[in-house]
Length: 149
Ligand code: FES
Image (cartoon, rainbow, N blue to C red; front, side):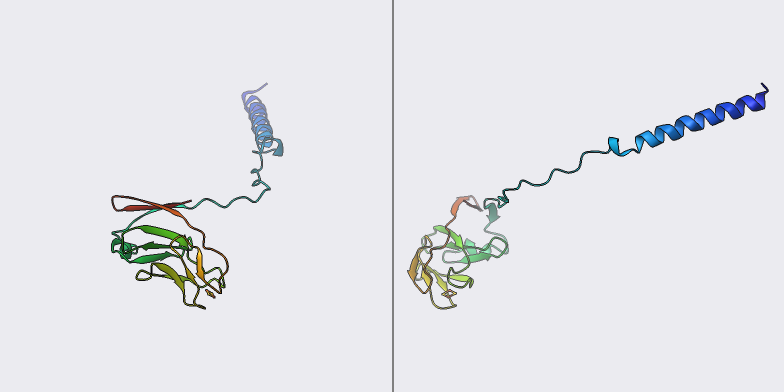
């Protein structure tokens, strides 16, 4: 065998090995497993648990007794009573989902939709709303207020 023929033979063999190897590497049997689908129970709601600094905007209204802030991301109204107690309840009226206000002088949550009022724990004081608001826990550490379930 001449040198030229030898090089051609070796080159073809090497190319065959490379192509075969690539085909094996690209085959479906070596593909990574498909992503696992989410659990079928649809129980994906996370518990509320977040912390805000009451000295910073947009929460700084809570740095004063009687102030309140509506967190529209979580639909929670956070209030500071005139006696410096922190409250947190669901911000949507249980009658027709109007955003609530906190009336510090009356120490209650108020709905301007149809006039329902709720206690500091979210209980209905005056209808037409018939269902209490969900209440959340709060703890203050320094300027950081944690709101959680
Ligand atoms: S929406 Fe609040 S009282 Fe009707």
